[in-house]
Image 1 (spheres, one colour):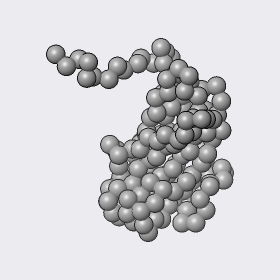
Image 2 (cartoon, one colour):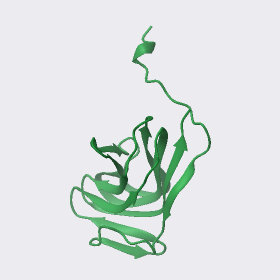
Image 3 (tube, rainbow, N blue to C red):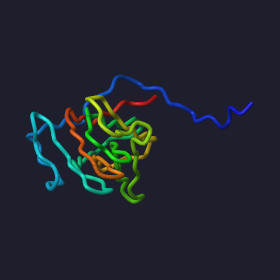
Image 4 (cartoon, rainbow, N blue to C red):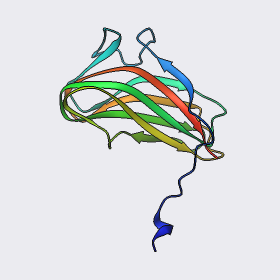
Length: 153
């Protein structure tokens, strides 16, 4: 009866392709409060903030799913911490996707987290920003960061 309310899901036209991967030899945008520790980054936040990790210049990406994926664990995270991705579309502004459905809270072990951004035909970003957002204090470790694209039919 209410099928018109359901979003039209587009099907992938192929497997995910790596745009870029990041490891501890890559330079972070934010330097304070982050240290390299045993092959990962340790982010120590004392307040609500978005910690800027990387910016990726892109071109010729459209009609696809952009995925920001990483392994994360936490210690004493108050409120929430989650992945946050911003896509800049020239002439239109910046748009975001936040991992609010899959946040870190309290103390956790390593797990895979991801956020996605759907690009329609003609939506061509020139810059993608990868962050970790905190809604309070706590420590998050992050590693195995990937930026992927999956073509859509």
